[in-house]
Length: 61
Image 1 (cartoon, rainbow, N blue to C red):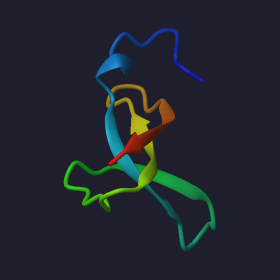
Image 2: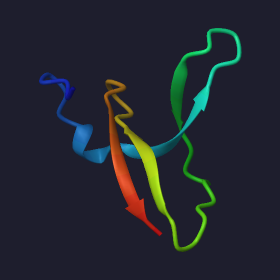
Image 3: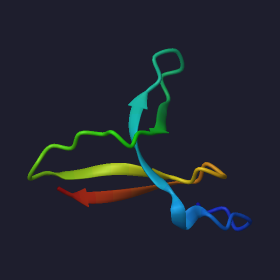
């Protein structure tokens, strides 16, 4: 869900998703050096750097 009080969500950055080993939860973090496989559709989190709102986007690579 988008944070209504945040005006910078439009400037969010793509990240990666991973499973936290200690909690077992799905987490995400910003990663601008991500290497994407060619010819695949990638599901990636887009994370706001101000409020942390995360939206999932499909990237055609």
